[in-house]
Image (cartoon, rainbow, N blue to C red; front, side):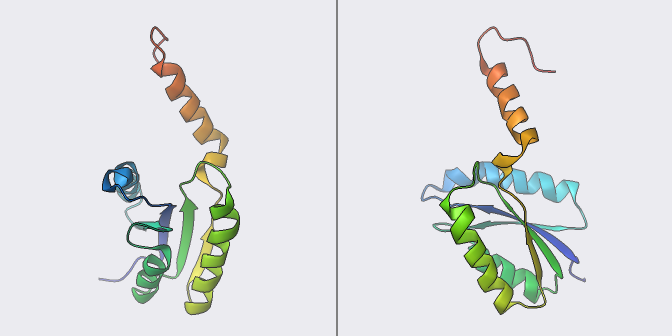
Length: 131
């Protein structure tokens, strides 16, 4: 079986509580179902496995040519502005044949904020049902 040419890596912070990753696992499963020709992975900055460099190394070893990293962070804090670019630069040096792109943090998207706002409105007691 040949490796997909393209991969999507959801990049999250990580936590000590294993339950913290459950929504990220569900997101990864939804995306894998929606993108059958794309290798969809979940990777972490710290505290959980796989770490981002390990996930990218595995994809490179499988022969994946292009990876898009999507930070599933709400905003552009220090981890996204400083730590992630440094990690990606290191990975690009180690795997020069792997083209690595990075999207903005999901919380920077108006569509994501609209979905969160709709959820918040819908959570109010007596609020009209979201359509």
